[in-house]
Amino acid sequence: MIDTATATRFQVLHALKVKGVASEAALSEVTGLSQDAVLAEVEHLLEAELVRRRKGRLGGLALVDAGRAVHAELLSADVDAAAVGALEDVYQAFLPLNGRFKDLCTRWQLRGSELNDHTDAAYDAGVVSELAELHGAAAAFLGPAGAALARFARYPLRLGAALERVQGGEVSAFTKPLTESYHDVWMELHQDLITSLGRTRDAADEG
Image (cartoon, rainbow, N blue to C red; front, side, top):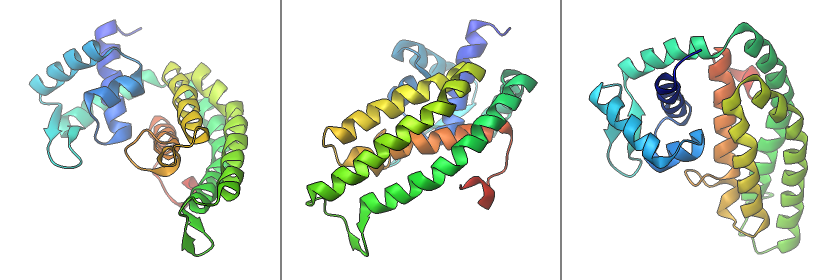
């Protein structure tokens, strides 16, 4: 069993591996760690030159090569054979819903060949209803994923929060990038499964 400090380091490194670039606040949201714990760990990672701080419009923290190497080592210790077996089953259940979700995203953004301006409340309500159905179906594999590895237990909470925002009328909470939208969290779930299983993404991974 790894110590608390190593577990915290892995959680932050893994969140960066999945997200690519993230702020401290986003890392706290993804990992469930307190902001103080994240800030302290980020300082250690910067000092150890495992991450760097990117500037600009898409600024934030990102792994460097040394950080990716440390993450890979910790990941191999985190995912044992039993977890791999469970996550393989989860992944096979995820893929069909991933295809459905991508179709929903397209229909949220487009109505036929035209951009969806979200002025047709009945149309949008129909798509949101389908998203809620998909969210309910995803519970069948999200529960086993969280049982296999505790870090996957964060996804139902984050997806549920995004769904509530969509149902509350927040148009951007469905697909807008970098807003903790349902799409953001779903894509991170997908990447987390691929990373945890040591897969290389190809056409078969798109569902």
